[in-house]
Image (cartoon, rainbow, N blue to C red; front, side, top):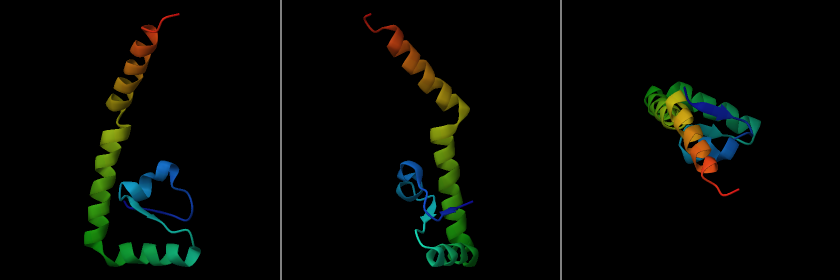
Amino acid sequence: VPVVSLISDPDNLIVSEGLGKCSLLFDRLVADVRAYIDSPASRRDVARRCREVVAREFDRRVSIDRYIDVFETVSKCDR
């Protein structure tokens, strides 16, 4: 599902990854939502990108590997 946010775009993820819109104005938010409603193809394309980003950035296995890398790096630091 595409993301449509009024103001919040943490780490610019929505805009930079093409996951939806950060509208900034209420009237623009309404127009952005209507545009997705009126364009199933666009909605599907953005939804596909959302799934790809979630799998790449937030999947449990990816997160665990990142934590392990951090702990291994920290454990090798001189004290």
